[in-house]
Image 1 (tube, rainbow, N blue to C red):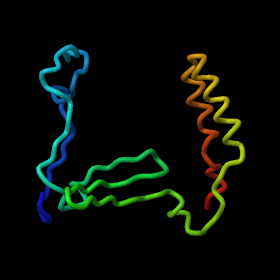
Image 2 (spheres, rainbow, N blue to C red; image 1 turned 180 degrees about the vertical axis):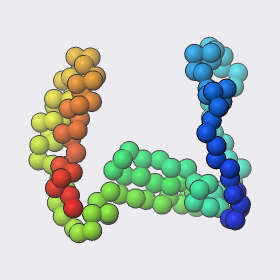
Image 3 (cartoon, rainbow, N blue to C red; image 1 turned 90 degrees about the vertical axis):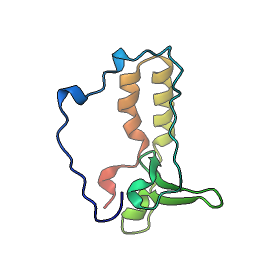
Image 4 (cartoon, rainbow, N blue to C red; image 1 turned 45 degrees about the vertical axis):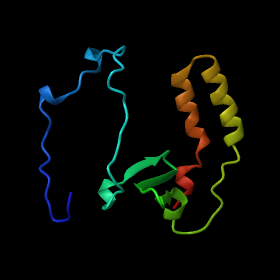
Length: 121
């Protein structure tokens, strides 16, 4: 999309929703892959990747690859120690819950892996 072009965004109709249950998972004639004909020219064309704390925009290229990085502590405004001393114990708890198949509780316990959001200003 070139700069200055507008895109009409509308509320999707019921017929627009993809129904994953109707997909034949045994059909491998159309492999699931994304291909691009060239590197991104605009930020909106780059591919976002990340895990919540560290993110990047992948611009593509063959001779040289461009990655635009973003790390969440860059946005706190001041340097600081953002480690959570309780994380190792929390990780052990999460692993135990996952090993026992209790995924809902493991998800709740995983919140303790992050630093305390109220401490960040």
